[in-house]
Length: 282
Image 1: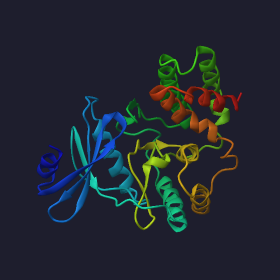
Image 2: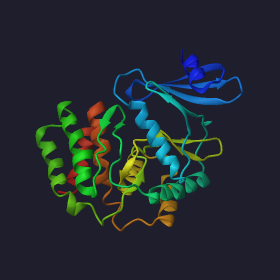
Image 3: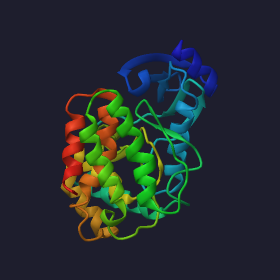
Image 4: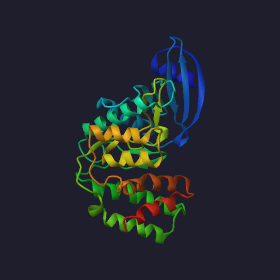
């Protein structure tokens, strides 16, 4: 079935399909070998969330337009299938990590027209509003923290008193946000699993939740779910696009979003981690 769909979408003959596992939203991942000798990557979406793969495809194209970091090319898409270039897996190297840090800095510096994006997206299996704003603090509180806080409470990953602490941080977001920043072009879901290292040790960004945001958000998520060579990446980044003083102390603020997303999706200890991150700022 997947082979037939890819063949029709690309207008190419398929030699074989290898299932690679299941990802967010129940998506199936596949390596598809073409008769020409090339491999492509296919992601099949079995659900009914509107625009799930379209948002990912648009984010990939938007990141590639910046010409700052390695991002797979979108070769074709339908409502339930996305096909991109294949990245042959490898391992991180120090030189590859340095390159990724420099390129990530360049990507962020390319900027965005606003905080948010002209399209709504998804973070994992959860919908994500990208309604645009001219300033970051309220955008972050209203679009990135509070919706997932409510979802995490509904899942009973944290209680109302714990939620109140996070709400208090949102009320103080203007004073906690640090120096104003122009909108950066963000990957938006930049944890270790979304950095694919190739056989040359080069890091590629995959599975984005792309939007205009605060550049410290991508870096804070990298630190939360860290890839190999994290400090090498951050040092190289700072050499190209120096970070504002206190950015490490603000990391917990930026980590509220991914922690609450995880609490809403998986429960467990993520709710307590989010509360712990928030209480640093009370």
